[in-house]
Image (cartoon, rainbow, N blue to C red; front, side):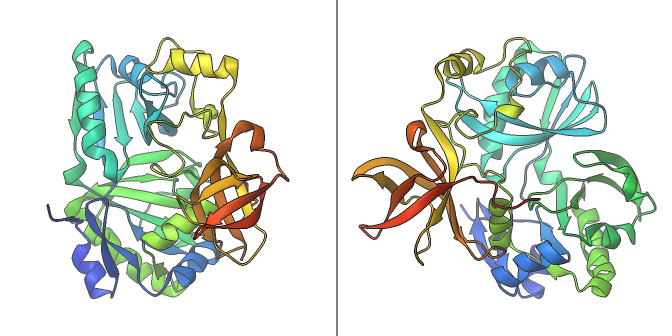
Length: 363
């Protein structure tokens, strides 16, 4: 099956984007180079096409009841206009996906699953809706989304909209902003560790928003950005990625995401397994690592101690901002001690590395 095109595909080609197949979508991995795009977001402003992300709606009287049973966070305690990070868990407490859920009101929610998991999540969730008085829809094909990120993101976006963006707090949103005949949902969210916004509208509307942002961004030398720097930015900011720091056999407790699991609410899928794990203590942990030599750690590399395998690298890079060879690792809990010296197996040879905190940046 051929990869899908976002509404902005032609714009990427015209702008010289290096387009690749990612999670079943044609998207630019970069335009001018990962390092330059990464730095633009950290120091100035960058623009991303994130139209490949999914969108589901949940509406109805039992929306909160459904969300609270199916997801790890507590939507009775989330305010209208607030975004809450959450996880979809299996019965064993493993992570099926991590998502953002936007609460418009107690009977109207927008769910943002990861692009690669849209069909999997939808098929999983639709089976669970039958016991609830709700309407559940996959509207992914109707929605375009862009992310504008970096210290100057607000200045650029503010040139487009009349709404005072100062009024949108972090992890909050405003829906129904009129823009040239289109309705926008704007949230102060992103996946870079910098201030910024995500803008949702129709596929037609997103073309208008993209073109106008490019024009408004000229004054700030705004940079078009691809998937490459999206990953290095989120990694430096200690933000997890599904398929790396999370998987069906990795729990939120192992992944360091306990903050998004509300044990004090009624029963939810995976609760029993996680309560048992909490009582006994997790057996593994995601933690940071720094190489002691010039070699670069990569996803999938094995980690050993005294010749025994103790874990694996989930994400690894030469950090563009810090110029350090860093990695997230999933290792046995007894070895997840800051200062612990371990071996990373690179091309069948051990390279010395040190366990560190994964809070790489003080953002």
